[in-house]
Image (cartoon, rainbow, N blue to C red; front, side):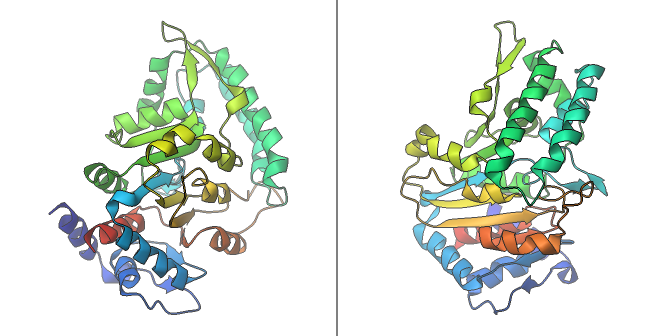
Length: 338
């Protein structure tokens, strides 16, 4: 009944709102057709470099069954909306930077660091290896400023309560489906783990099957913030490295070697590198805007059209300007029912 309700809700959407699949080739697979025609993308477009490979992967997922599936996803602008009501969505660091629980000095320093390092993060002409040292410096600066704020673990909960964080439409149904079917759901984020978990709890998404690999703080016995381990930072550009060392997590679910990977940056495509004897890896990319790989504040800006080929190389399916989770939801429900 649960799956039928989801499908009926998607089918009740206006047919005119369903975007067309963009590719040089037609889609020969009925399962893929069914997924894409039912799913609802209000303003987005769907792209794939090779729909034949995409349809084969969906077939392998269906044949392998639910017991072989796991989900790995980024958090900022993947689980959350990049835009809501025309406004840019908040990231983990944005939630902290706007909170009443931090000092004005921290906010000023956070803004200064953003202006200094964000253009480097989004510069398409620098390699990930060239960016990593600068991203570590950025985190180090935030860390030092945060230590001066006299904050406690409970303050991260307050920060989330004060924020306007918006999860993608359909994400709650997707997470609930993975919980009901006992599918491991890993959040792999370069953000702030304490903020992520607070967001999950407050929005009812912290299920027993949901785990987070991110940057978590250490706290004193009274809950006071001590530090982050700056030697083990998870960054946008080193997720592959951390995936390879996450042996305890992937080892516990080594029989689940069919993986749905989702992210909004090119580095997210490598998040399944630690999977034991990987089987089929289905990669879904959210291409939101110029904000993560290019910046309007720099001369190195790349448009969506310029970035799209890189995303199509990295991901099997690319969703452009779609602020919902409806495509992944429909894909998972179709796999579960077939």
